[in-house]
Amino acid sequence: MSLTRRTLGLALAALLATGPAFAQSATQALSSESVIESIKKAGVIRIGLSLFTPWSMRDLNGELIGFELDVGRALAEDMGVDVEFVPTAWDGIIPALVSGNFDVIISGMSITPQRNLTVNFTTPYAYSGVTILANKSMTEGFTLEDYNSPDVTFAARRGATPANVIAEMFPEAKLLLFDEDGAATQEVLNGNAHATMASEPTPSTEARRYPDTLTVPFDENFLATGEAFAVRKGDPDALNFFNNWIGIRTATGWLKERNDYWFKGDDWADQVAQK
Image 1: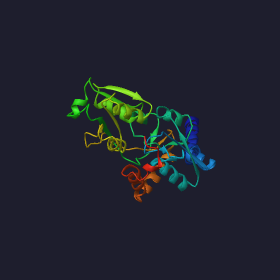
Image 2: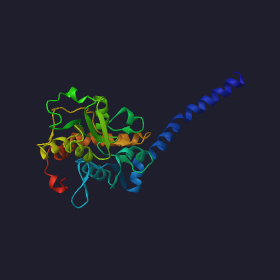
Image 3: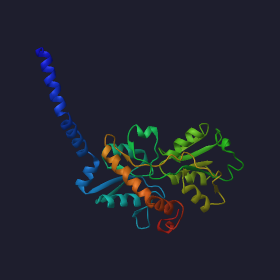
């Protein structure tokens, strides 16, 4: 055997011998860098969210309540840590996660390919589409196709899923963008826009509140793709833990029970200021 072949053989044998150890070391290093380990070490999970009813909102005393708050607090309890909620403007919430301002987004965020380019998503923990809320007198007799017209104006929250759905479904219509869902609804209520789109229960709640002015014209939800936690890329341990937590809480019926409480009833309505 030539010296070169012998040297290559020895090098290959050494590589094979150290391969498992190297792989184990790499795996341990990856696990130690997971946000799960950071949360355990700090003793607190920081959750980024935006305020919109009934996902997350402030009660009459200024305290945060809502579906996301129930989810976040249960998650923290199961992890054995405290929880810190970080209210963040919707259009900056993904950059804030990537920058490390908090550990995870739990804020009714729908899974989209565009968002998935920047963050990773867990399996869905909720499913809610968006519904049209229209000004009754301005849209009387409208079919769905009639909303796709240059003469029709929509209002929506900037950067949110409904704004994207409106742009895709009704490309001919005008679209006014605002920083809050409430502002978009107010434009429809005031007659400055024909319609808006939002996740339930907002459209149905507003239609019941202002029955002479607002209506949900179609018994149909659009783009019910599911809402998920968002985490930074390159963290398989975080995805594994959060996915399993969602799976367990789904199997026990807890997520459905909490979702039904906040989205299918209004027993909580007296806890928040009425607009």
